[in-house]
Image 1 (cartoon, rainbow, N blue to C red):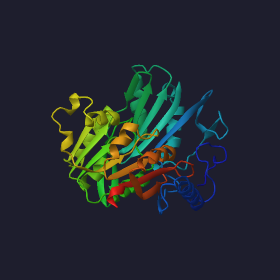
Image 2 (tube, rainbow, N blue to C red):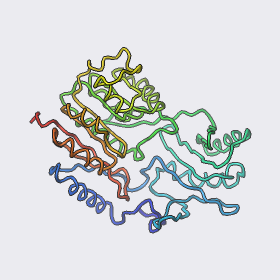
Image 3 (cartoon, rainbow, N blue to C red):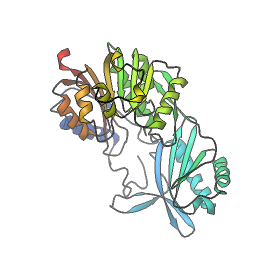
Image 4 (cartoon, one colour):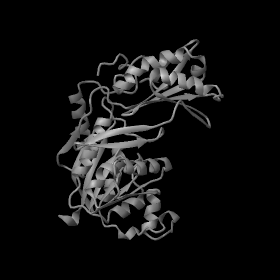
Length: 369
């Protein structure tokens, strides 16, 4: 990637050709997971530039001028930037116009300390972050600003949120030649690399054979749930975030899916329910034990799986584990390898030019061999 800030910016740290980066990541995962798997690693590559649909930048004020900033390679320092080749084309195109229009608007630029971009099929959402109270005149200025740029703008300050217009974020994913529509909220977690996300979901679908029902933990807004639902008779999916569950339910409606039940519960709470340790009002009228789970899908946060979840999923034949942190994946595999073995292992290069690696593992119960 040809970036004028590469030598000083702390975001992209891997030099050399993309093929060299690919080889480096494959070698690292092969070595780190040799005790669990000695088969072929599947590698799902990223575009070398314009791959990020989410981007965040600081704002620096120098008297009358403002600049985008990023963390520098030198710890504790920041650099001014005027481009970021890794962001999606709609964001890259907007960046100079956003700064120009903010620069000329005293109300919008005062006490502004950061901006966030999210690009999806329905357009771009720009979030402006402030260290000040937003007064009653602010929304009119925000509307004019957003209209000029043909975007939706959201301003945030402590305890305040102001939108330029009604928020309707819809993205589309193409999985195995089928289009899925996904409704998003402004603070929803979205996979930053859309093209690799599509490959990741398609890979997860390829892990499904001889299926009945699916249990999915940490389901978010249904990124995996919606495209995988057609592979199963029924799907039970859980997530702790209220807004994510609301969007996930809406996404079933958008895609005419009626075999999924979403529960607003933490993974640990659901484990307690299965062990009959606690009764939950949210589960009234639902027979958890009527499900016949052939597959478990987990996509946990960086901390990995709780012990209660590991002990529970060990009972099932097929586990699809999506990991954003190889270290906690490795820790969890030490427990899961007592009952399961890896039959597929994938690397998803969500962040080209960085050391970050995401993985997918299909585990099958050893008794099945």
